[in-house]
View 1 (cartoon, one colour):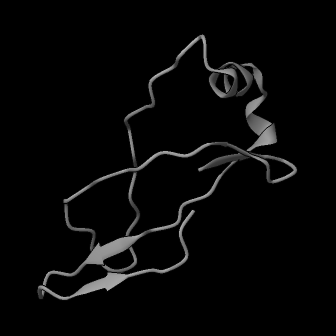
View 2: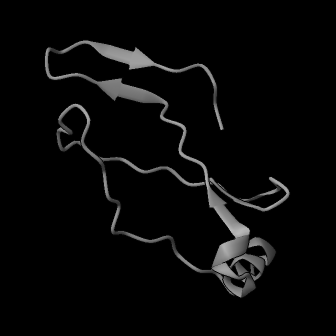
Length: 76
């Protein structure tokens, strides 16, 4: 989810990644989201200064190498 400095939600999207991440390592997402010039939220987001934006990452589900899974109830 991307919010403005007042925590107003600008856009929400899902990121799916199945590559393992070792403990204490980081995950870098090098993809993007599709821009729609007719969608007000997209136009607003594109015109904002990056310093006024916050990226909020809330995992919904984590699959562990041992086959166990953790689901989180706090949905974005």
